[in-house]
Image 1 (cartoon, rainbow, N blue to C red):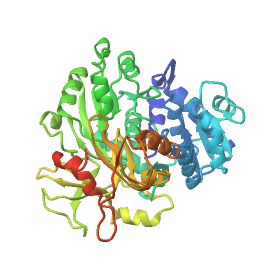
Image 2: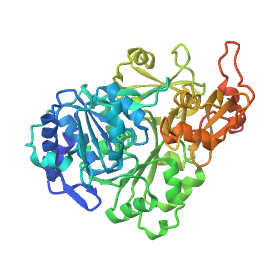
Image 3: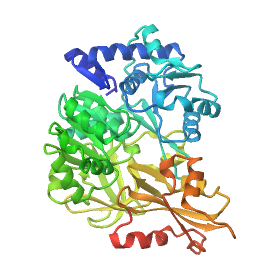
Image 4: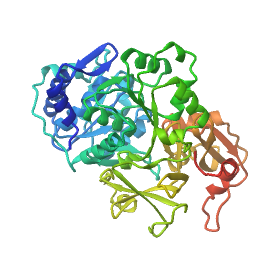
Length: 514
């Protein structure tokens, strides 16, 4: 399999059908194929060679769709950049991956000087926006117009498709290497389940396109010859208007988005009957929110997906029938392309109902971490991805997540590693010691919470700390709440006992994660 396969098939079978809808622009399959071939030619003209990385820092758009296709067409490797990162985090990922070409849109053009200063190996920055191109940047549309189309390299199979950066346990992002086969296995496994993405559907891109959850929806829709509808960012009125105006059939959301949409006062003003499939992830959904959402989207089947970047990203699916059967606390059963085992500390499979580590095997398991062979060897053993999530499986194969063995928080659909937040928090002059944990939150699922020992005589407010942290890392990672204590609980070996810190927040819930 290769990423551009669906574009060729769609342009052959229905060349004049709409492939992308973005604002007032609608482009057919034939038009997109021509633009992709020219953009690939432009990248080659900029010196992009086989296996080179090309990054994109942008909101959702039809140009993002073209980037996802043109880079492999040019025999290069994708590096979609997290739009919520700081300039330091973005530059680190570019330096670490050796990226030399970056595409930015209007929303991030102002960040270019700071990024370029921190990533001096960038030799070309392309402006892919609608406003005038800033000085020093290359114009996306001018490049396409001037370039000659080139043949598709048909880069595919086990070759590297993209480097997708995720939070790191050491405080630095790490690049997950995914092949074309990895991405195909996950997306087509979702299609094969029957829960997601109908033939010639109309997929609404609401979640950010740099995220693997949206990419699974993008690939599934591409494979089935569907239409891609883009809105730049999640905005409830824009989502409702796009569904009603373009008759969207499929989308990917996080539970918080579903709640906001279901409770929005304008929801009754829009015809939402076209939506057939809603995939959500990052956390379970409450029965009350699901009930309101099912009324809002009367024709939709809701499917929860559990997974991670390293699994491209889908591991398990909880389908619509399981939602109706009251299994909302479960993360579902192994997806068609996936195999799940629960193992003990020695890697031996444990009996049903016994808590252990969730491990996953299949064609979607990553190639490894970019330039991190030791971390790769620790995570993938004998073909099984060790997720770092604690859980159990019942006798029918349903997986239940009860804890995270890795020190990670999932807040509003984003993964946050405590180490990177602690590194930022500890730099505040008022902080003597700190521990960062996730605690239950009705709106965000989990919120980032900092437990802090202050320097003698120092005072600290949550607002001061957030401002400090946001100057160093992405704002969503900053603690929403803080707790000042005299001392942190530690083990005999001096390790901070985070389970003790979490206990008063989580014990009443019967689990350690949302």
